[in-house]
Image (cartoon, rainbow, N blue to C red; front, side, top):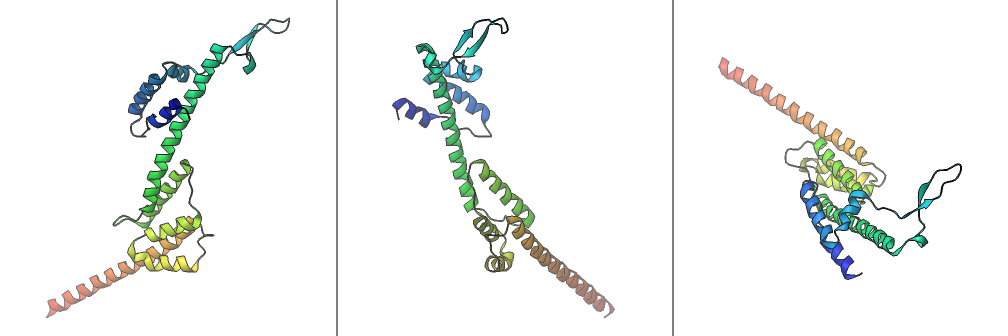
Length: 214
């Protein structure tokens, strides 16, 4: 790697999706600091070397691209600059993906249900996280993502989550199937809580009535 290419790959401004305007300014400054022609190449595209094709009785005069072997030295220099610009942008994309991937991996490792969060909301957040991974070229297998989701749920679901981990093949189950099983169990828990709450209200009303008669 030449000193120039090393400088370019190390100093490329990093794009943050919430601050595109600042990144654009920094990228323009960065490119102009290397060669003021780079920005023009991006704005107007590479002007491929062309040659004139003489008119025939059927076809009028027109231009076609030259073969590489026909390029002049100035044309070779122009096309080399275009290649360098594309390399800079490509390297920038790789750096962005690498940084984004590292952030997502950290979010995945630390993922857990939020206090008071419904299981449906936890599932939606986890699914969004997995979809974000696909945008940076990373994917977790079914067993890993299923296990992670089950371990991330609220403590009151631990018993059912443990049953699913030990009684089912998490390699074969889809995340949606795991979610449906846990959602069904969660609904049963909520129904039991509601019944207990209703029984307490009834008992309290009866006790109040008895005390009133006394």
